[in-house]
Length: 403
Image 1 (cartoon, rainbow, N blue to C red):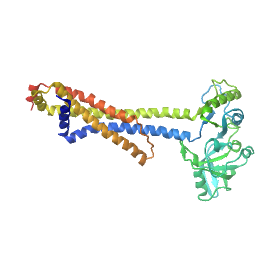
Image 2 (cartoon, rainbow, N blue to C red):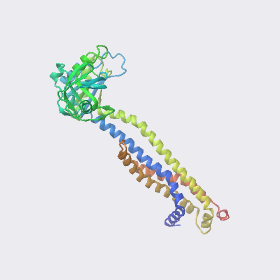
Image 3 (cartoon, rainbow, N blue to C red):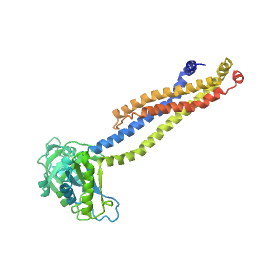
Image 4 (cartoon, helix red, strand yellow):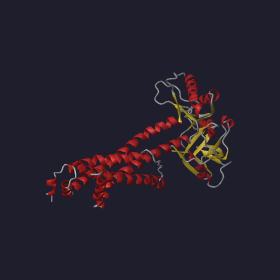
């Protein structure tokens, strides 16, 4: 029997019970849509993380104290930052930062508790690619002289002064009074940090007024950010910084008490974290496809039972066993592929809908579409083969007697 005729018979068999055929495909539709949507959610999360990290500054190197290094006797010092600035070639600036415990901030009659305080050096704005919206940042001379100046995050400025300009106004941080000289542009949340809700102060003032003289006090800093001249200079800068700080800290280069990371290192770490999330989503989608395949096999077995006399009659009229096998296998594949097509459309639409109505970013992975569609085809063939063989193995005489 010609393939075209077998295909027509298979299609007629499916259209005889349209509702049941549609319900049979639901499992595959859900499974395919789940694959596309879940991979889009995962890819969107990774892209959002990468964008947030890259928003911290271009060609940025992050120098921080190493954790859990046996025998490490020092942490990063403010002098380390200045040494990097003076001796490392191929960089455009550094920003040393220290973050004491959150403080109470007062302005006029308003008091806000638990406000993040960040002590920085003068090049913070340039190094971190964080523009000033109003006023200016403090200078290196003002920082060295420990002049009590403050720059506010956009959200904090609005909370403290409303529509009034904060420039020249006084605020009290803890028990120390500062003069506001600038407001940062709105940056929002970056890697779970609210940049708009912070107070930026000269690091010399922070080390003097807000850090104790114990193990976390003195001139110790939390992080040193280094901006390389270009992406091509990053590796050279890392090598120079590692060698310089190892010598200053009297440690081996291969066993430093500090770490030097790039944005890509941090992105890779975050991607490793989301890998487990993506695997979980893949398992969920896979289970959906499996359930859809079992549904197809179940309905096809029922169909074989219901159409036993039809199968016997076709065999009696000359249809071969392989023709019957092909007919029922094609029916299963059609159901699966139809579910795959609808699932792909729903998956793409659902991905855009997630991004439109929610706060979750999605990014459709092009490879997920053929992957999901191919999986649907495999499900149809795999779960349709057993019912098809049962139909092909029927004895025509027994089938014709079937009630």
